[in-house]
Length: 420
Image 1 (tube, one colour):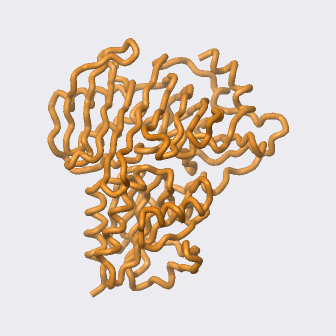
Image 2 (spheres, helix red, strand yellow):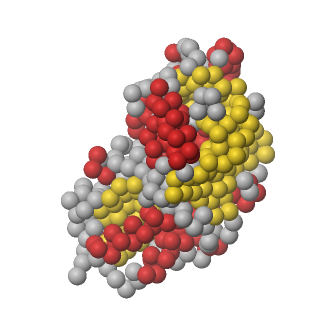
Image 3 (cartoon, rainbow, N blue to C red):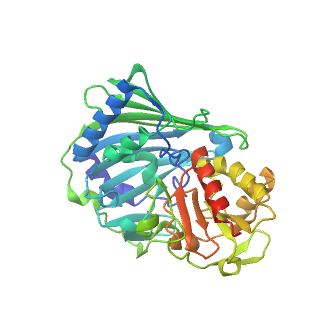
């Protein structure tokens, strides 16, 4: 990793904050679903991969993230160098990510960098010459999710994959020069969402993920490929790699609110998984937001009603997958004491883009505009995130990602919470 250390100073001076804003595509597709048909040989491979992930101390590799249908989704592709050492928790892993992104809306490559020293996350905005930082436990970066899957250091990530309805072993393939086991995971019994994992036959370390999702109502299938090369297992990495210095002439400042997420309360924390609560959950933070048609909407005025919030953005593939289901719930509960809102947040390209998207799709449930403060208050760490609030103002459910099972769960919670 010597070459990486030599180039850090130069790369940090050419970072563009807008890089890779929408890379998650299908990274947030839910994996916490009911157990189903799991082939024993596939389960054995995933469990061995989990054991390796639990023991891995450090890793380095070159990564590529390639979304399909770029001309339709606008999602950028990414090339990056990733270096990471294990911490005591996901937020305390030490990680350095340096690379470039490119998309139809961004013809020229844009350089970006991300670093976490285990306590603080660093981000540089080259255009505005700002050097930002935030506590690692409170930061959320989709750039990191795109090229650093949690499977490298998390045994639980593989255990969650084993809860999918179908897990099967596919014919072996070679990635680069590495022979790999190939495991296909279907998250939806109807075959609408799946992933194919390529794991080294000798070391059981992840080399590639192919994800695909196809939901009626969004007009196209979604897909992405994450792949790695030049992998180094347990390399020795200098601490300075994870603590970049502000480039000369840059202003130091805290991270923008949209990048910062307070940790969710323990009783409703999902950490990328699904959770549910009864009426004993915490009181939902109050808010007042503008709707897309200019009205003020205040949570306090909705007491006595069940409220569903769907935090979303136009660039988020799973968000778009979930929206037909949200519209269905809006139609089903029309005339009942239920209020369903889309909350547009973390948007790239301004409010006009979100408004036009809603018009083009014909969605009729109310849409609210959030500049990041409400998402921040609700501990949104990834989108889509769904929050169900009971008639008494307490949080009944919070879950992230999309799956038909979660949609059914939300529907059931709303039905049971409607006041008599």
